[in-house]
Image 1 (spheres, rainbow, N blue to C red):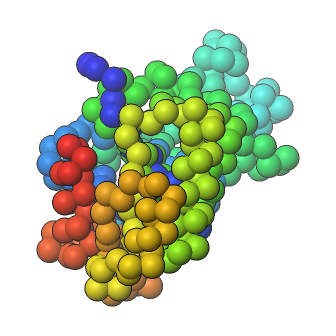
Image 2 (cartoon, rainbow, N blue to C red; image 1 turned 30 degrees about the vertical axis):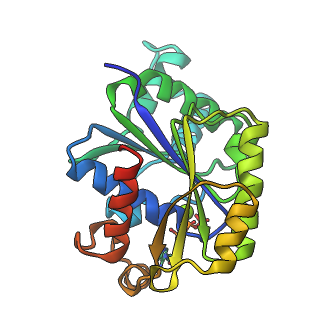
Length: 256
Ligand SMILES: Nc1ncnc2c1ncn2[C@@H]1O[C@H](COP(=O)(O)OP(=O)(O)OP(=O)(O)O)[C@@H](O)[C@H]1O
Ligand SMILES: [Mg+2]
């Protein structure tokens, strides 16, 4: 199978990266574009809630288990440490009906994500070609880009709220992506939570000023907000939900 098409999101905190990921995963699955590999690369993972799937384990947790097993000498004698680690990490893949998912999670101890980052890359190298799409939810800012640990991205979606300052923040991220020579095949801006789905002229001017490519606007939507309040998965909202409808249009315009 050919290389998977990798879609990643970037933006400042709370702008709707995870919500967008959830709905676009739902879109790809409904369009039978699978198999889809979902990667929750946010240490404070919550993409599963938006999708409505249970997560029992993360790479961070498994990493701790391996360290413990090594300390206690409970690694089976028939296995090398590397074999054991491989065996354990295969259990990190969460299989849902429509997609598989890897959750990076947090590492305890010294709070270094390097190990989990490296691990994620190894797993991606190993598994990614089994999928036609990889969708990666990231934490606010661009830690993974800054560390050079993001895999190659085909479609980078910059997400901003409907504010000048939001656009300024995302323009800085775009600059960083360029400086880090991440070279996504395509990169575009999505404005989320626009009142009535309408972009104000001031925000539009700010987008132009920074030379960002606007690919779509998602409306502020009560049902999406309510899902969060009620702990319901927003990705499973009906297809006529205004945010879902707008996102479908964006995906189609991107040829996805
Ligand atoms: N279009 C929308 N209309 C109404 N509420 C929205 C919309 N998009 C996102 N929200 C709400 O905004 C909040 C933040 O969304 P989300 O978690 O997707 O942002 P995020 O960018 O992933 O945040 P973080 O940086 O913390 O990971 C959630 O309560 C979500 O339900
Ligand atoms: Mg998020």
